[in-house]
Image (cartoon, rainbow, N blue to C red; front, side):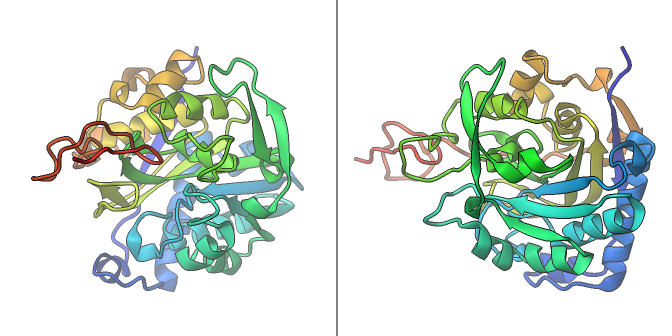
Amino acid sequence: MSKPKVAIVKTGALKGNPEFLGGKFVRYEEDVAQLKLKIGEAISLAVGSIDNIVGEGETVLIKPNLAFQAPPESFSVVDPRVIEAMVSYLKENSKAGEVWVGDNPSLGQHVGRSRPAFRMSGMQAAAERGGADRVIFFDEEELVEVQIKGARLYKQAKIYKPLLDADRVINLPKMKTHLAGIVTLGVKNWQGIIPNIHPSGEQQDLHRLDLGQKCADLLRVREADLTLVDAVIGMEGQGPHAGTPVEMNLLIAGAQTVAVDAVASYVMGFETVEIPAVRIAAADGLGVREISAIEVVGTPISDVRTFFKRSMNDPVGLIPGIHAVIQQTCPGSIALK
């Protein structure tokens, strides 16, 4: 059996990064052009040609990590420059009939509706500048109940219809640490394909300790045709929304989501066995996580590997004077005394 191929590509320095890291997102035309060139390089290395992914007249859905109602400067959402470059690349270099961009934020309808999140993140404007045919606010779309064959926890789930309607899907996560999942990359990004309404009687508990298994189950609904990680500026520490930026200037791409996540998490300084979603998805036969079983092309891992600060998701002993009895990230509870 041939090894899955994952490409690591250096983007080079971007003109807007110093201002971006200083707290102000500024778009420069040359940055978008440079990213578009590097996206093409990553795709060529990983799959040979975009034509091997996208056929003539096909509809392509780009599913980014929208995550929250947050501005680009939060570094918790995909870089708008990467969104624009990806859309523009597909419009100019593929035979796609239409290119869509769509997602649903993870925090639910009370603090994370799609429409304001797309606007605040700059992703709607970026997608439109790139020439997207549709920007899709998933939480305003029809849901389809599907049975998930082989799933362990999510035997059935309500899935946003655009994910099922698209001919091809591109998974576009951001490189971040995560309180509940160690990192959030491509497998974890599939959280956005289901409603996540806090509190409610269904599907509201995705961010509990069995997060990894649930995301692995959701990967069975539909595997992305291409996963490309936005690792231009990642996030370390208290991710996925309260961490600090790390300038990486990388893109990581491949046709197998689990393998891409394995390489990306290893680049971040983690062992792949540490990442629940990757470990479980690999154990369930959805991909490979051992670096030795992956053909890494482009820039060698050894040239770019760094060590991200980890998230602290256990409040026990974290804050002097506060006695934590029990903990659980996201909607869990902490008893204070």
